[in-house]
Amino acid sequence: VGDLERALASVVGAAQVLVDDDVRSGYEVDWTGRFRGRTPAVVRPGSADEVAGVLAVCRSLGAAVVPQGGNTGLVGGGVPLAGEVVLSLRRLATVGPVDRLAAQVTAGAGATLEAVSSAAAPCGLDVGVDLAARGSATIGGMVATNAGGLRHLRHGAMRSAVAGIEAVLADGSVVSHLGGLAKDNTGYDLAGLLCGSEGTLGVVTAVRLRLVPRLGDDLTTALVGFSSVDDALVAMRAAGVLEAAEVMFPSGLALLGTPPVSAPVVVLFEWAGSSPGVPDLPGVLDAAVATSSSQRAALWWWREAHTEAVNRLGPPPHKLDVTLPLGGLSGFVASVPSLVPPGATVVVWGHLADGNLHVNVVGPPPDDDSVDDAVLRAVAAAGGSISAEHGIGTAKKRWLALGRSEAEIAAFRAVKRALDPDGLLNPNVLLP
Ligand SMILES: Cc1cc2nc3c(=O)[nH]c(=O)nc-3n(C[C@H](O)[C@H](O)[C@H](O)COP(=O)(O)OP(=O)(O)OC[C@H]3O[C@@H](n4cnc5c(N)ncnc54)[C@H](O)[C@@H]3O)c2cc1C
Image (cartoon, rainbow, N blue to C red):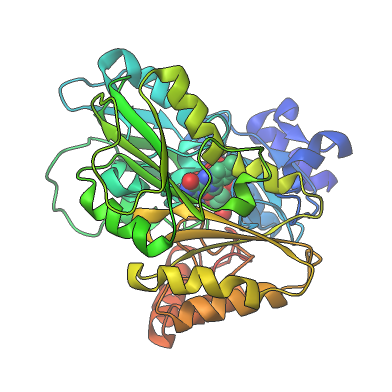
């Protein structure tokens, strides 16, 4: 550790190499508390060149590296489970001037989503990807996980928002393509390759982001109750252009109190424009509508508070973020209780339009992954994906072959070998 610490300090300065137990500990455990490891040092570079210097040191000393942004990832991909050095990108937090003509901005990898959204606001612009962890999740982490979130039905995942990237590769070279040209067909899409690469192919240091028109307060939000998932889906299709469609169930809502709408299935719909009531939708049992920003925030709270409420239940949750074909969503939801051990608590919510469910199971010990196995196999059998938006991380790498063929995984390995032949970057993530 002495050599490593000294060599890292020669690149970033001693103050940016954290080795005290109590300072490191926050970087060693993930947001859910399920994944906990140990690191010899947390290193906090302040520029892309310093990132390159850190990687050179780690390569020469044979120390593997885990890049970390806001540490809000939910698949154990950003914590040092095998004694890696933690490379924290949070100091790269600069947000450049907003280019109003192009509707773009360049942000450092460590800038939070909230910081970028606030910088875009005075220009009437916003980041198209939004998620409840916006105050901590970083742009670099969101690119590395290809985050989806609450507006995916409208604007797609992070990959759609990326117009260019600067990254440091494992050999220390800096690849920078931040011009943000609308059309630029000049070879391989390195930025696209880094989206969803979970820190295994390069360290993202800056991102050129495409922005979208800001919605402001001219919105209508409603909690709408249905008797079944199928009824909710039919109504969603009849609802026109939606800004959000988030699904919840009584088991999750009950953790938060008595919701304004009580029904077997509750969906938060959001539309652009103010309307005094819910459009005439089929199958509606009950509805609560909000148009003022404070009322809308109160309805959103019922959805966004789910994640923390599950964490408060006690033992760290098993979080299974999956996609089902829309036609199979209702049957899958009905089958979930039969997939978990007796006595476990199951809480499900998700992004309805994407067929994306967050299946949370509380009860089984963190290292018992039999419930993960049962749920992920059921998802694959139903034609779904074992990771909708959180990525594979360490939590799901055992099951990658449920969603990817041997040939695809071989191609993944070839890409990894080409860009990181020594296995320096997140060697324990993604690939089984
Ligand atoms: C309350 C809550 C709500 C959430 N809601 C959503 C949601 O709706 N949709 C969604 O998709 N996710 C959601 N998430 C998950 C999480 O916020 C996202 O995965 C987010 O993109 C992670 O960003 P981060 O900066 O915290 O990354 P981290 O957790 O620090 O890292 C995540 C992964 O990216 C890698 N990484 C981080 N930074 C870099 C970098 N600069 N270069 C290369 N690799 C890097 C890490 O090694 C790790 O593999 C939620 C999480 C919480 C806690």
